[in-house]
Length: 246
Image (cartoon, rainbow, N blue to C red):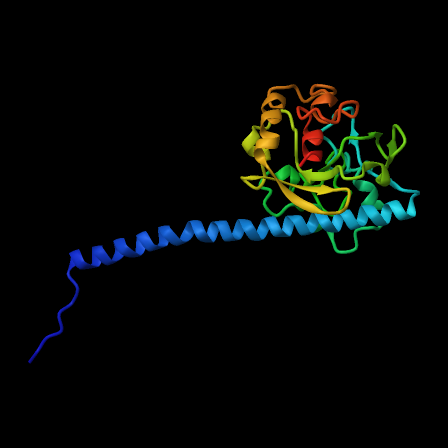
C-alpha cells in the first residue's frame, strides 16, 4: 500500500518564503495603484471647487472668495474660524454652493488631521464647537486679507487671474517639514483659473517650504512675499508664482 508523502518542514518553509517574496512584489504595486486613485479623486475635487468658484463669480460680479486670515498667508484653507465666522472658502459653504457634501473640500491623500474630513479637531459640518476651526484640505491663493466674514480689501476677480493658480493641496505652513506638506509624495495638485487641475512636481514647492518651516507661526511670521509676489510674477521664490509658471 502506497502512502502519500507529505511536505517536509524545509519544503514548507521554502513555499512560505516564495509566498512572502510574491506578496512583497505585489504590495508596492497595490500601494501605487491606491495612491493613483486618490490623486485622481483629488483632481476631481479641485475641478468641482473650480466650478463652484465659477458659479460664485457669475453671481457675485466676478468676485471669488480667495485669500487668507489673521495676516497669515497660509490660512487660505478656512471654512469656519473658531466656530463663528466664515472667511475665504467658507463663503462657498455659507452661500450654498457646495451641493454634494463636504468631502469635495478634502484631499483623500491627506493624513494630517487638521486638514482631514470630519475628525475631532476638524469637524464637519461647520460650525464646530466654539474656538474650533473647520479647515478645508485645500488652500486658496493668498490674494485678499480677511477679517472674519469680511474681506479687508476688494475680493479677487476671477477674470483677472487669467491662467494663474487658485487652489492647491495645503501649502506653506510654518513648522511643517516639506515632506509633511507634499501630500501626494511626488508633489501637489493645483487648480488653475481655467478650471483645469493638474499635478505640480514637489521640486517646485519643497525648496520654499524649507525656508518657511523654521519660521514662527504667529501673525506675519512668514512674510507674504514667500507665498505670492504680484509685483514680480517671475519670482519663483514665491509658492504661488512658481505654481503659475507650471
